[in-house]
Image (cartoon, rainbow, N blue to C red; front, side, top):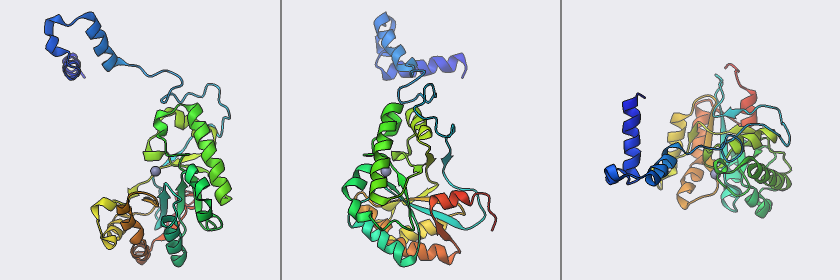
Length: 269
Ligand SMILES: [Zn+2]
């Protein structure tokens, strides 16, 4: 951006801050306030943005991998469910998956895993269980200490409810800040986001339509986001699961857990 561009941007910011109207009378105090709007710096270390590993509690593996999808020619898809468990909804999903013999990955909220442990206990054998934070706090707004405490608490609750050791983290909202990055690395997690998601609000009362949309958009290595908790309109996605599974299998797709999909990276059809 050239000088003129910078000046134009500053004018726009000042206008939004209601300071341009003051014109020539713009005082030093007002300018300082405007400067804070435009130039506020994030702390170099710590805070929600800092990810520098200065004094790691545990260095983890010394790296953090982030996965949206997996590169492969094989028709593999990882179906993922966020925010559960929840009575009835999660049970319905587990029943459907059992009927079709399809594995999935459940990114659980720790608080819910503790509260509704009976919903998932003994039922996660073929499925993968992963961490979706303790109570769905936005981890992009927390520093590393709080993110670490949050994720550890969730990890323990999910482990107790399911008997599995989560190795994957999906931060709520797909928001990633420095504090979460640092905590995830220290705890040895891999961050898993998604490359396709159900859009239930586009298919009100039309499970078959939602299923067709997913079948049409799935590509080899897709990680699909669904939810087994939420507003009632999300039931469209869950009710469409049988159609979706049959549709994808009809096109030659195989359902795998996220970790199995990652293990298949680079594999050829
Ligand atoms: Zn979520």
